[in-house]
Image (tube, rainbow over all chains, first blue to last red; front, side, top):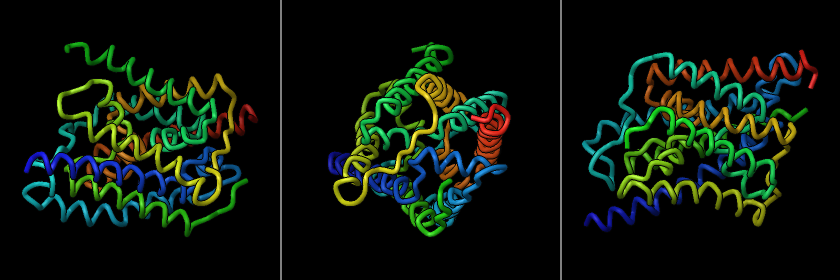
Length: 145
Length: 140
């Protein structure tokens, strides 16, 4: 039973990952030029990405509400939701640093990983640096192992 | 210039939303990319498989698309050193701020979490200001 649930979770994660990537590609969120033109309100503004987030929230807001009323997910014992609630300096500082990086390259984590498939070396460099940045955070803030 | 494409934007957004719904409904997990790959750096027993499959799916989706349709529209805008610097900021910042566009922007706001709304407004504003400075002040 648990074995079966584990297998179903793995298949579901793969399918979700593929669907997520296709969504990023169809919407062109995977394209740094598109992202930077969305962010560039004062210049060559392209509002498309507002429709991407709008489309996603249109379904997640009602669906999450319904799903979280269930006692547990379909193939797992419980929901794994973020426990932090506080709006603190780490949240805001992290969001600022992320925003600056996103605004420089036009890539955020999902599109960057999906764009690896292009084989473009600067994308590979971006993802390697991204993993190094996450690792640096781990070394600095998560030392107790 | 890029063309305003609201319909494909909306369809892509719905697909991203649906993927996030599948993860929460099936596995009880938040489809936040920075959190999913970040968890691969701190391997916990029994917590690796689904993360590897999701990240693998992201890459597989990107690899399969050109076989079915057009090449991926990935038009890079900046030089190597800036790509590396930006990658470091994105990797460090998303871990410090507990999320990125997907985790806070789609899933967090999807749960109506105030923390995620603040984070999303903050990184959107920071990204917008960065683009403004680069394009209109340095004229990049």
